[in-house]
Image (cartoon, rainbow, N blue to C red; front, side, top):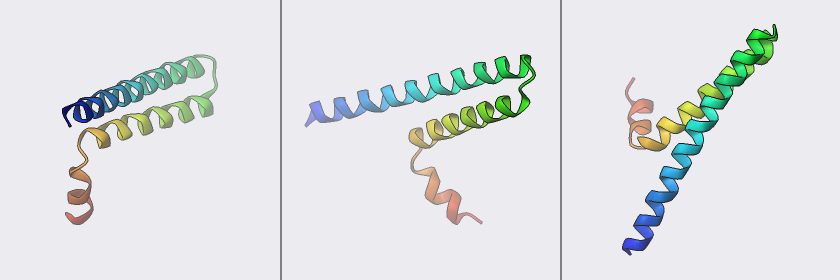
Amino acid sequence: MSNMMRDSQIMAQTKDENLGYMSDMALELAQMAEDTGLATLAYLFRMAALEASTANSELNEPDDLPRQITSH
């Protein structure tokens, strides 16, 4: 059973690292697009970076989602 838990932790860490990398890369691409005058493309890359960083935080704290929905 401990092997499954370890594997699960490794997979979660890998997914977390991949999402962080995707967010960083999207921000770099947004800056490159901005520098070349492609504001719409820069905006889309920034939205992709935001999506990746949001997915990253949701994976790290899955218990927060139900409280966020019911806390109004």
